[in-house]
Amino acid sequence: MARTTANGKLKLYLNQNGLKCEDIKRNGYHNKKNGPGTGVASRQPRQESFEQAPMYVAVMTYLGFGIVTLFGYLRDFLRSVGLEKCHLAQEREEQKDFVPLYQDFENFYNRNLYMRVRDNWNRPICSLPGPVFDLMERVSDDYNWTFRLTGGTIHNAINMGSYNYLGFAENNADFLKTVADKTCQYGVGVGSTRQEIGNLGIHEELEQLVANFLRVESSMTFGMGFATNSMNIPALVGKGCLILSDELNHTSLILGARLSGALIRVFKHNNMHSLEKMLREAISSGQPRTHRPWKKILIMVEGIYSMEGSLVRLPEIVALKKKYKAYLYLDEAHSIGAVGPTGRGVTELFNVNPSDVDVMMGTFTKSFGAAGGYIAGKKELVDYLRSHSHSAVYATAMSPPVTEQIIRAMKCIMGKDGSTEGIRRIHKLAENTRYFRARLKEMGFIIYGNDDSPVVPILLYMPGKVVAFAREMLERKIGVVVVGFPATPITEARARFCLSAAHTRAMLNQVLHHMNEVGDHLCLKFSRLKYSSCPNLHDEMDFELVS
Image (cartoon, rainbow, N blue to C red):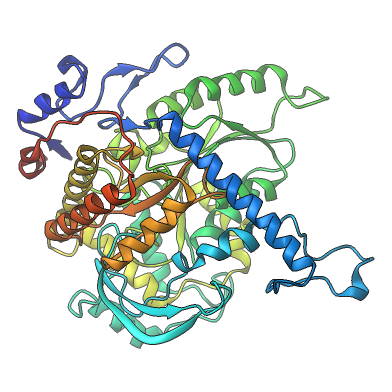
């Protein structure tokens, strides 16, 4: 088993941030009680930060949206009287009496807010999405309604937005030799579902490898990560069942829950008191009107929440699940491969037995540099899904080169390729994550999430600053992802950085240097907390493999 060990400076650093030495175990976990209700010690790796912005920031954010909305109504009036051209689709005059195809109010945001800043999204790239990439230059002659390519290219921009956590999205010919061989052997497409004539030997090999990696009985793979959630949840629960869903769950989980026909109740993010209260009510009250017992109660959570960078409180949730005889569905899309001493996700990070999680879900699109997803758990679960999952019955089988890419990456992580490259990448990602997060805090940015999470959201708040930040960073040849309302709460627009094992320390220092400049220029350093500089902490952190 692998564990993380740190030198004596770790205690000093944590003491300076207000934590007591006796609350910290040797492996870096906090040993504090979760509070009344669960009676389970929280084994949260390091600490999570959700600092609130000063009041003036919230006021200015609402004021900014208010001004933009007023101008939007003014521009809609100018369009209605013919003084300004409307580029969006509109109802034809002879169809005005029919049910409208286009809702003016629903399109208001797109017309008047999003279109003005659309150049910051959907940027075309023309290279491998590795630690650096090339972007195609484009301009707009009509205020972002349409774009045209100039023929120019922005070369070697540092990529801080791709989910390439372990750097397996690569074009190294030596690493990809087996992928090329399988492509020559099988081609690039299967042309059938696995239940017909699309079941290849490498598909079965991958499923066995995934089960061994996760230390469960069986697994099943799918060609699309989003469909792994949205098409399998309806096969697991239905009418008469109850789903308890974290409020920050991904859209694929939400869609799957809605398609299932089960009743959905949402609990506060990572709030064990909210979850336990709902479990108690569900057990005591039963179904609405009839008060019959629920057929199933399914708790749905994610390992790493992709917009917040926070980690699930897995030990407490497992304890509640056992206490109230519920089922647990764990989505590890962002956590599998990215956290844990050997990359086995949050179950390994929290030292939770994988058999305590009823349904383990994950994707191959992040840490493995491929596509698709998996469901893993007991053999009875997987056998049931093979015949009842829409994604299994109707979807085309996974492409052979994609399958081999996943096998290659997973064998590398497990050390089955005879090297330590996989474990080196896992440790490099952890080192990059802690270094980048600590430096941003020292600069005065408000960042969300757990210190072990490679997803690093930086709060920008105001809509104008979101746009300015993305453009300023691109001018400095740094590609970033910015996210705003309605994908986030209206007052919590942010930039989301994704760390990778492929990032060198020089790349991160370059990004941090420009972040410091842009943060000062745009006044983005809203944090009121003081963090002590402790550079040796990141350089001297080491990882010890223990049998």
